[in-house]
Amino acid sequence: MRGTAVTDTHARYDFDTVVDRRGTWCVQWDGVADRFGVDGLLPFTISDMDFRTAPEVLDALRARVEHGVFGYTTWQQDDFRSAIAHWYATRYGTEIDTGRLVYGPSVLSQLSQLLRMWTREGDGVVVHTPVYDGFRKAVTGLGRELRGVPVGDEEALERELARPDAKVLVLCSPHNPTGRVWTADELARTAGLARLHGVAVISDEIHADFVHEGSTHVPWTRVADDGRWALITSASKSFNFPALNGSYGILGDADDRTEYLRRMETAEGLASPAVLSLTAHIAAYREGGPWLDAVRSYTAGNLAFAAERLRAAFPELDWRPPQAGYLAWIDLRPLGVDDEALQRVLVEREKVAVMRGSVYGADGFVRMNLGCPRSKAEAGVAALVRALEAVR
Ligand SMILES: Cc1ncc(COP(=O)(O)O)c(C=O)c1O
Image (tube, helix red, strand yellow):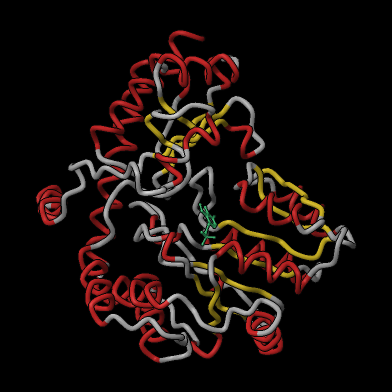
C-alpha cells in the first residue's frame, strides 16, 4: 500500500523531466565557472534544486503577477502570519505565537542582523563542524570569532559555550552539510548549556521541511525558554524559490523583536518585503504539503540510489543517506584519495562539479547535491564512482 501511495504521489508531479536552467542567470548552472574555473560542467553544487516549484505556488505567483501592481507591501498581515502558524501546526504539531514573528530578506541576512545585535567584534560565535560556508562567511565577515565544535561532541560544545566571550551558538537544525537531525534530547541539552552559560541561540531551520522518514524535526520553540533565542527560516529551500528572496524568524524576547525591526526599518531600509516571496510562502504553506512530500520522497530515491552504487563500488565507505535534505555528504577518507587529484578528474575528465569538503572545513569529503531529476543523479553518481576508481 505504501509503495502505491508513493508512486501515485510521484505520478501527480513530474520530477523526471529535465528543466533546462541554463541561461537563467542561475548560480547552479550558469555560475559554475566562478567556482570550478570552467563552464559547461554538470553541477551538483549549491543547495537549490533543479525542479520547478510546487504547481500551487506557481498558480499563486501567476495570479499575483497578473494583478500587475507591485507597490510597497507589508508582512504584518494575517494571511502571511496565519499561513506560517498553519504550517507549524500541521507539519510539526507546534503552536506558533504569531506575535513573535519577524520578517527578513533572507535567512543569512537575518543571521547577520542578529549577530550584529547580540555580539561585538571579537566575540566568540559557536558553530558545529563541518560548517555551512554561509555561517562561516557571516561570522568572520562581521569580525566575530568562529568557534567550531564537531557535530555530536557535547563536551566540546560545553567547553566552547563556557568561554566568557562566547555570546551566540548558531545551530543548524537539521545540520548542513551532514544532514543530521538533532533529537529532542540533544536540543534540550543544548538549550540547557546555552542557558547555563548565558549564550544566545540562533537556530537556522531552513532544512527542517526536508526531514526523511525515520527522523523527526523538533523546532527550537519546543525547547526554548525565556532567554535570548531566534529561530530563522524560510519556505525557500523546501519549495525551491530562494531567488524570490524572503525569510522569517521567531524571536523569543519582545525587546529583541523591537530592536530587530527597528534596525530593519531604519538602518537597513527594508520595511517593505518582496511581495512575490510573501505570495509564494502563503501558497506553499497553505497548499504545498503534498508537493513537498513528493519531492522529498523523490530525492530520497536519488540518495538511496547513490547509497546503492557507492556500496557496490566501495563497500568500505559504508555510506548511508542523510536523515534530512537532498545533499549527499560523503566521507571519502577510507579510500585515501587526494582531494586535488579527485577534483581534477571530476572537472577535466568527467565534466561534473561537486563541492569539495574543504568548503565546509572538512578535507577528504565531498558534498553532492542530488536535488535533481533521477537521470542527472545517475550521471553524477556514475561520474563520481569512475573518478574515485581512477584516483584511489
Ligand atoms: C543552513 C542554511 N542556511 C541558510 C541558507 C541560505 O538561506 P538564504 O538564501 O535565505 O539566505 C542555506 C542555503 O544553502 C543553508 O543551507
